[in-house]
Length: 474
Image 1 (tube, helix red, strand yellow):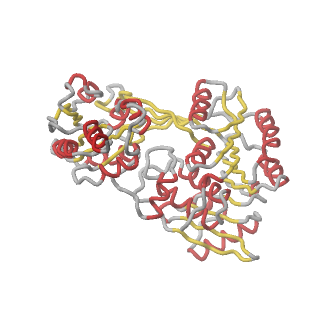
Image 2: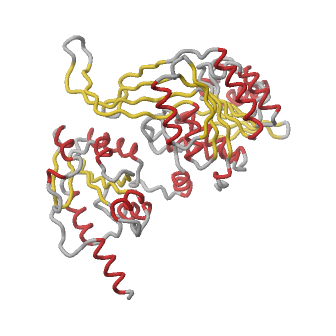
Image 3: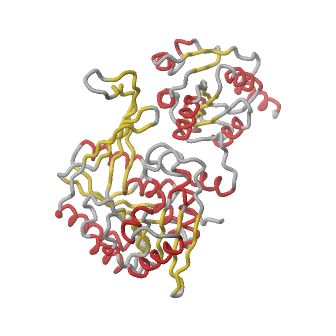
């Protein structure tokens, strides 16, 4: 499978913007007022949801994206706008008196206990104002995604579809509701299996599924129909030379942890692939791989080109993980009563001192996490000439060590934020640190964790190694 350069992609996204708000906490007792858990909030995070998550996925894949939508004149709207700015996503937004669509989730030990939704259907005036913006933006794009969550942004979707067709745009829709007639004339729709069945009825078997899907494709005058089927993979039907060809894809997920936002990833990667010049079939293969990656992460997430490349080539390193993947691994380990040890550093040039230190760290528990400073944070700590080896290389070398179970990166100068997310049972550093000054130490001790130091091997350091190399070249 070869995927053309996704940086060539240019996609316009129009749809319902959402703010995903996660409150993480711990439960230590049951309320005396009612048989419900008392949750002590530990930290919170905000993520892009809905059409904003679609745009974020395109941007993460390297494509250029422009996002049009509606958000409220409220705190959540400001938070959403700031997240879009931080993600370098180009936008043109309408501010409404209605609240920003917000999904607030209460999460304990990576398990979602409760979700609170705040939303109101946007007014006709809001939708009309957005439609005027859409008319001026469409002429700049050949690929358009309509991300329909039924919140009112696309309430006049037929008019938007006609505008896009007048501008010769290929239109992809993530549909909502039981009335798919409103999507007639678009290029591709990507319903999940449940949505598909609600519209055409439950298929008796695979042959009946093909028949129902073919009828829907012809009825809506689609170029292609992509049905996402969870653990059963994906089914793609393409209209080719007056024939409908079916293609099936096995699920690519290594393990499923959270399906939140998976549909956003599918349509985003599908559209990005097509816009970059890939065929519908190749773009669907890309979408299948991308979806398999994000369902292994916590919450609404995105995937990156390197993850796609590694998965396709079979070079996916099971030890080098994203932060959300490490959270999942820790949860699984703790359920097995395994003790998780955390350490961190730049690990620029690996030497005997590092290896001896890491071997001793592993003996303090069952699983060892090594957190590695990003290239930018190394430069802040060590100067502009460091690191000698880039982040990917440093993480791969560490992952090759038998004593290391998982390797994760962090972009801040210190790992304090990451430690609060991972909550290891043991935090360890070299003996050149006093326990009281170890970053994150007080926090780890606050929930009963241990903070330890390990004696260093004398005569070994990265700075000394670099100095020896430079002196030998003179």
